[in-house]
Length: 397
Image 1 (cartoon, rainbow, N blue to C red):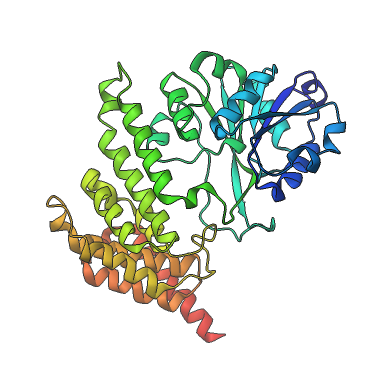
Image 2 (cartoon, one colour):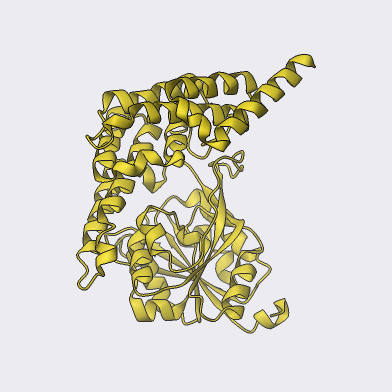
């Protein structure tokens, strides 16, 4: 469908606001910068102590923008109020500190109009700091498509700001649940058959700053585990879904171990990781888990980059996980294999992210020493040979 024909449709954009106004004008500007212009912006003031109306007075002169005010009831209630106030066939949810790239709405709407079975479109995202500067590229999130219930249970991130949703989804499957995170909504949608379509392109900038909700570790942890219990108590869940509960609990413990390291709560991180391994013993079969633990000491948004990366800290953390926690009985016989993976992970990061080829050779050699059978894995041999070649070429220069 042509961009001109898309203008026949309208999108309701909901921005909930509770204080934290310094980022709001930039967020609104990103709406006005969209290549798709037939939108209705509803700003929901969730009982802010700060004067939202005065700050956005100029924007309110535009007939596409309105503000509604409610007593403070939380983000979910504010989003629900905005959704119910609007009437368009499509709904976008934009947090007051995030920024859309100009093509966001047009790209998402194009898919929903061309692929009528798709219910929700969402895009990739990049991190930015409090000043709006993008972080160097680190570990990237690549959106997937389909039902995604399994992926969501395993902790796949789906930012509300990155999604365009058919209004019929809310009419069929309900609004946000007050007191719960948006994750509960996505799980409920997926359980009822919602089809998601991911755009493997970062069309939003997700701002990381000291007021982000995910810094409230204890509160967020409590809510996430409540949501999981709530989900698995849904009447009539198929047996194959119920069987995923230990894995889902394990991944949540793992995610909160990483968040704990991020905010310097090392003992909580180790406790969460211990719980993760008890719930999901196969966790340490996933190389991605080693990489994420190795990068857990890095600042938020810089995971997997060479910025502020310490190989000594990464090695200490990984070996501490294997040594101090104590592996579950069914994994204790594989300690040498896991130690080998620790060093292979460090070698891989030395090669791919830091371009420290001498270190890569050292770590991959340590991986082979800990568990010689790892040589039968083709990636190990390939990394080792390429590291030697690049190390020699660098020295020759």
